[in-house]
Image 1 (cartoon, rainbow, N blue to C red):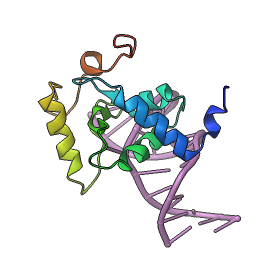
Image 2: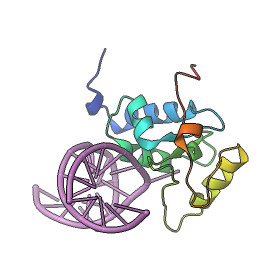
Image 3: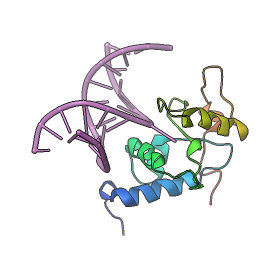
Length: 116
DNA sequence: CGTATGACGAGCC
DNA sequence: AGGCTCGCCATAC
């Protein structure tokens, strides 16, 4: 049963992360650290970024709903996806202020509110 | 094997 | 607000 959470294989960690991200509802966002925690991988926010970068375009995983703890879209210098992410979020009603920041109190995902 | 590098985050100044 | 350090750990070289 309780496997060493910090000792899971990279493969299993990716599956857990993808599962958690897939559970983020439309119009809500979660932070890298939050996703890591929910995936049973505390303090491994960087791994979440890696897991998302490994996704295929047609994976269906809502990678755009993951932002950093400052409420901002994390920089991927040179990649068009950084801008695309903002577009996808605005399309589903997530508001960004002039500086591109999202209010986590308003749009942050609370798993307890949306069980299942 | 040692270093550097990240879609990160918390703490500190 | 902005910068720095350290923790984290898979990958690349």
